[in-house]
Image (tube, rainbow, N blue to C red):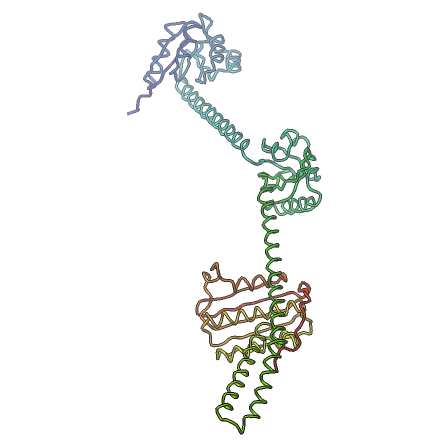
Length: 506
């Protein structure tokens, strides 16, 4: 059984017989019809205002109010309903005139065979028009919201076009360009040279090079550079991030945003300057410490060394005089001599820690070998050294820095590593000095590296940074730790710290 289709019909018809015939045909075609018959302009207008209709069926016969006059009023009302003419006139000219005027269909009253199909077709077209209109309205609302959003962004949204001839232009620039670049967006669109003119001279090459690279490979264009504001001469840092696509004519169009990064950039520059100042201060402190160590070592060597040597000579003289005297006095003198020997040995150890004489006399390799021997004696941990020397000179500053790094690393191994072997490689190569220290201990955890009071590791990093070198800490739990240090030759400047040529007391 075919379902009954409901249909609301606005019928513009002067003839009652024709109206009845039309409604009967609709019922015969399976429609449940709700209708209103109007015979004048005012009634039609009121009916259209109230709405609720599915279709308008209008007589095109000359009697009464109907035909093209009704169609014109219908169109003026802005209605989107299907509008079909019903007529006894079957002339081709009449049909053409009706369709050209804007009717959705033309049905002959004598048969009405195609009335149902014409209505269904009109309803489908009306639905399509309604959906298109709704989609268009939704698009307009979306575009309005998007435009509002873009206009309120603290940046400039833009389209940048690179023509095949090399000409640049801005097909679109948002309102953000006014505050960012100081230009009216319309001016920027009409004259792209305005933007190129405010590029900072030293940054223009990087701008064009990065643009060409993005255009050739169709990759993201991410550029940072400076612009000079035309009105104030103030320098701004900007960042451009945009995605390219190649048009059918070969031109490249980028779409993206341009933001003001001056604050973060200047903050970064300030931070970098602060870091440089801190690094210089750290280097100055290291130099001052080395100078102070050198002074203390000299004082110990010259003053205390001389005094202890004199005491040793005097005690030796007393021992000779007391051989035939009181045994108790002789024993006491020999005890004093032993204490002097212990004191001289302690002083020599302090001197070696403060400033090993072998470093100044024989160089960094000999100093590291001696320090490794002392480490083996103190800890019982094997510490073999492999050296590669290609005949390059090492500056005094670089030598003392490498020696202190070596000392600090051995101290950390002795305190924390629980190692049974340490291997050392020092290679004096063409570009710089490499010092590699490895142990087979328990390893260094990441959390230990990040401890606020890990001054030993930070001291190593600062010493290496002073020479623009590199340091890498490699470690795995249970598999030991490796410290790799590289100090370039050309940047290892000598500070003229001086040398203590002889630091042993006897």
